[in-house]
Amino acid sequence: MKTQPQKAKSSGSLQLLMSYVFAEKALFVKTLLLVILATGFDVLGPMLSKVFIDEFVMQDHYPLWPVAGVIGLFVFSVLAGTYLKYKQTLRFLDIALNAVLDIRKRLFKHVLTLPVAFFDYARTGQLVSRITNDTESIKDIYVQFLSNILANLILLIGILTAMAILDIQLMLVALLLIPAVVTLIYLYQKFSVKAVTESRQLRSDINSTMNESISGMTVIQATNQQQAKYEQFQAINRDYYATRLKSVTVGSLLLRPAINLLSILVLGGVVWFFGLKVVEGVAEVGVLYAYLNYLGRFTEPLVEITQRFSLYQQAIVAGDRVHELLQEPSAHEGSARWSEISRGDLAIEQLTFSYQKDKPVLHDINVQVDAGRFYAIVGHTGSGKSTLLNLLLNFYQPQSGSIRIDGHKLSDYDQHTLRQGIGFIPQEPFVLATTVFDNIDMGRNLSQEAVERAAKQAHLHEVIIAMNDGYQTELGEGGLRLSTGQRQQLIIARALAGSPKILLLDEATANIDSETEQVVQRALNELQGKVTLIVVAHRLSTIHHADNILVLDKGHLIEQGNHQQLMTIEHGRYRAMYLLQQQEQMVAQAEQTVCLSS
Image: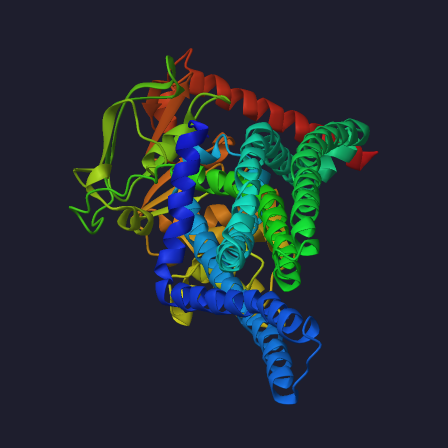
């Protein structure tokens, strides 16, 4: 993923995060009013204590109704302030949860629109971490920053106002703490931001490593890589521990201990200086008591602000990572000049493509594909077969040349029209952990009749109705209730259910048994003349009846023609590949015969 300057990223993430606050302006204003009211009641307590001490205790005079009135007002202010703080916490939490929900939805929706090329380099675990962990951390922006820091700032203003009413000189002494705290916050941000950023990246690496290990556990155990994977995981864990310890160490030094030290020094100075004035009778005892009470409350918001700032810093880093992902450009949607693929013919003209600059994978490909015909693409591994299919699906943009469907460039169709008009059957079937019906329908709101018709075309209908719940049978994660071949038939049914004009198959029979291969082959044979078939094949025996066979070698189209025509080329690549596979098949059959006879 691309990187941006830290300041620019933070600015963008703050705009993103604050936009959700402004979207809830009415709720935010109501919550702010609750904070102000709660602060008013909170500040009232020491002032009432001052009145009680100076008017009653120091005068040794306790008239019933005035004393009861002051005590009653004090109890009411405590209860009202507590209730209002409870309500403001709920309101801020409501804002936070709604914001996180919206950000997470927006982020996942954006990921669904990213081009396939993005996922060639993105790690699954890191993406999952951004959508789950980082968005959850963003909640601290609203709960910790808005709720705690904003509430504490308003409380500081209220306390300073009360101090000024009591004694302006005392208030000015308290103000000395603020620049010192601002300096500490600046130093904390300066020394912690790198460690916080690194720790979040390492947490993503931990998720990614676990996801990769669990997904590939069979391979890991088969190749005795358990210890190597464990050591890799341990190394990331150690790095994460070191960066977190560094961040915590900085916070432990610059936050509460330093603030407490400053407040103790100020408190000691005030007690010494104004205590003498009380002894001399120049100052009132109630004023000193109220001031010391306010000073204790004054330092606590400062401590809270500095402590919450560490969470705020982590949330900003998480916001940067979310914002960075949202800045990734979506796949090109197309111009939507044409809303339907009507025939299904293709024209590939001077097509050149490379994943990396100056390393072409396809070179100047020119092919005319007639609608309703069967075309096959063959070649050794790395020859560019699957890449050509990916370009036909508009997953990537060619460096030069063009692809036209029904005479129109791919860019003249929107993505929905292309996906609707082109069916794709990958080598590895992707099956959702849901019902058979949902796996074929894939959210297209197809009728039961359309789904069953597609299953019959894929020769899977009889298998489905034999299940206990038929088309409503839950298939489990990865389609565990189906065999490998049946999963491939399910994917064929899914592709056919949309009634595509063009059907692309990427070695769809490479990993299934010969019996299922014959079933799949029969289904494909029945489609000839009805849709345009383009098949990438490894087993040449499955495509010898194709109308045209394209032979690729290192990205170049070196031969094309039907099976009979290509077999007449004496030193042709296709002929050599076909004869070699025939020999391998004969040897395999001979070995099987020997095994059976023995």
